[in-house]
Image (cartoon, rainbow, N blue to C red; front, side, top):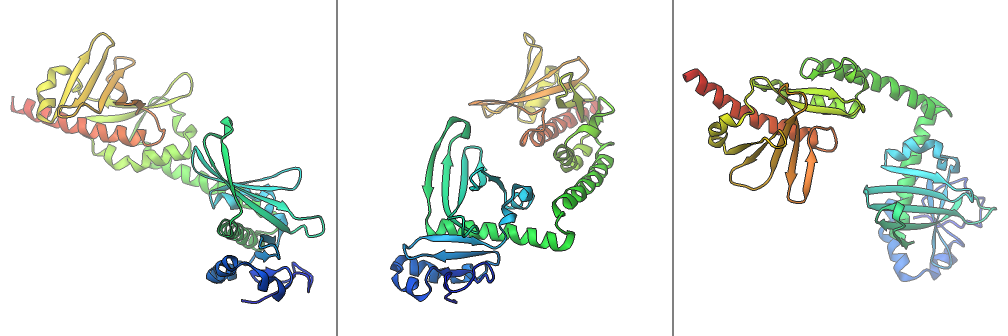
Length: 346
């Protein structure tokens, strides 16, 4: 690994991964733990092309960033590929956010060291547990490992920005966004064409207004829905523009008069007449309990599933709800098949 002094030559002209504040003098006085860390991670550091690690005489590590304009939030889409967002505060402090869960965030805070070396930043990394709106505790660290990981993240994003500018020019963000829109539009048309005949749509304009993720969900379940014999899935838009996937019972087999057939298939069906809804559940287990009801008495049912700690609306595209709705409908279809076969036999 090369040993370069940041005082011996103009900085920013040659990025080599690792630099020392005063060359060999700084390296000699580093604590053994930091020396060991730098040696053990030599390969990772040498891979960096757009960021240098700087070790100073106080055993602190800083980042020197080759193209600081790449820290502009205008380039956020390239950070988003790393599941991150980026902010630039009024004091030129750069914040790079990521989250693995609604209540677990990581903040990387880059502060300029001084006005003369505007490309050099100190780094603090915080793990934040809790909802940001409720002022959770920030657990800060500036450990060598956290700083190196931050450098790798920035280096990866800046490589993508550099490649994009080389290919599309300085206006690469706008070019890519416009291209992405065209690609998504084509993708949407393809999805609409593939699912339009599989599902029943109550209103003509639903498909054109469904988010792309929801269209992809419809396509993912297309084969299962097409294999249903006695049921279908109907998509309805409410007066509040809320989209509801509903179970369409083509032959009226959701009825407690068929309870024996439900029992033969390991389920019980109960007509809760007080609330005009049916409850269907596995016989051998208390949960889950599927609650279904028809809004318009037309054999199209909204579906909820109840667990010990609450309930979930399966007639939606939130999370895995729609997938679970289709799987439950497959179960109903299997029961309906036994009903149909028995009726054929008389």
